[in-house]
Length: 269
Image 1 (cartoon, helix red, strand yellow):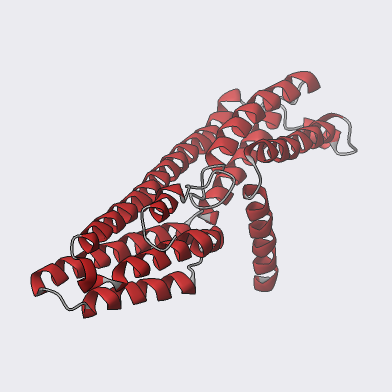
Image 2 (image 1 turned 120 degrees about the horizontal axis):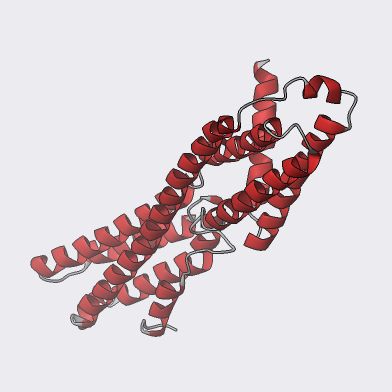
C-alpha cells in the first residue's frame, strides 16, 4: 500500500505543479472544467445512473450539513491567501533590500577610487549573473552557481582591498547584507508553493461540492445550480491566489528590473 500511496502522491504533485504553472485564465478554465465534470458526474450518479435508486435513499440530509466543509474551505482559503500575500511582500522586500545594498556598495567604491578598482567590476559581474542566470533558476526553486561564484569574488575583492580598516569594514558589512538579501530571496523561491496546503484546499473544495449534491437529491436543476454557484466562487478565489503563489515564477513573477537597472550605472557596460 505504501508504494501505491507514494505513486498517487507523485501524480497529484505533478498535476498540481502543471496547473499552477499556467496563466491565470488557463488555471481558471482547467479548474472550471474539473468542477463542471464533477458536477455533471454527481448529477448523473444521483438521477440517471444505475446507482440512482441507492443514492436517492440518502435524501433528507439537512442543508446546514454543507456548512461544515464549506466553513473549512473558507478558513483554509483565508489562511492560504494570507500566506501567499505575505510571501509576495517578502519577495519584493528581499529584492529591494538587495538592490539597496548594491547601490550602497557601488557608492562606497566610487568614493574610494583606485584603491578598490576591482569592486565595480565584481559588482557588475554579480548583478549580471543574478539577472541573466539566477532569475531563471529560481523558477525551479534553485540558485545559480555562477551567481554564487560572482558573490564570492565580490566578497574577496572587498576583504582584500588595501584601504583603511574602518572603510573596509563598511564594505564587508555591506557585502554581507547583499549576501543575506540573496539568501532570503533564494529561501522564498525554494520554499513555495506549499503543495500540502494547496492539496488540502482543493480537496475540501471538492468535498464541499459533493456535500452540496447530497443535500440536493430531490431535483437535478437545483443541485446543478448550487454546485455552479459554489464552483464559480472557488474558481475566482483559488485561481487568483494560485497565480501569485510562486513569487519568482511566471506568469506573475517578481521582476528583476530593480537589479537590472543597476547595470546602467555600473562601469563595464
